[in-house]
Image (cartoon, rainbow, N blue to C red; front, top):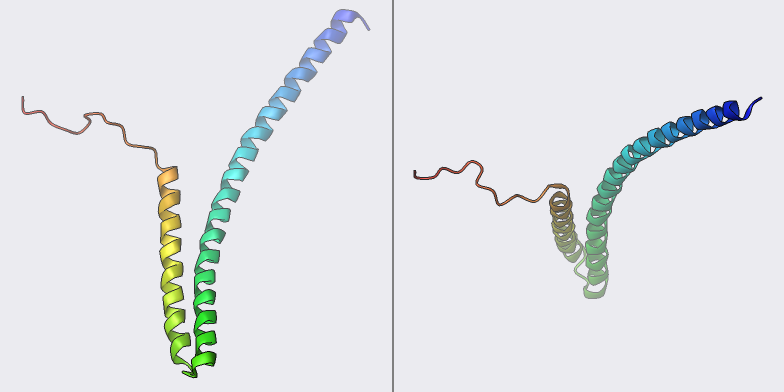
Length: 114
């Protein structure tokens, strides 16, 4: 085997490796984006369940201490659910703000009085 032939084979191999790496990084970016969306969804579900559970726990503890059997538990479960929904909506707004591009200050769509 001659030296120029060896050089050509190495160049072909390098080109194939670069093409393979480029394909892998584009697939990986798509997979990470999908994983990121699932991660955000689980975060919101966890926030909702945590609010509900904390409200239930506080209500149950107050019922045991005060002897007002189901009333505090029902009240604080509802308050915890409302708090969980509030946190979940705040997280959704935060995610929406990070994903939508900022508006430009252009004059598109406006009419001048000329």
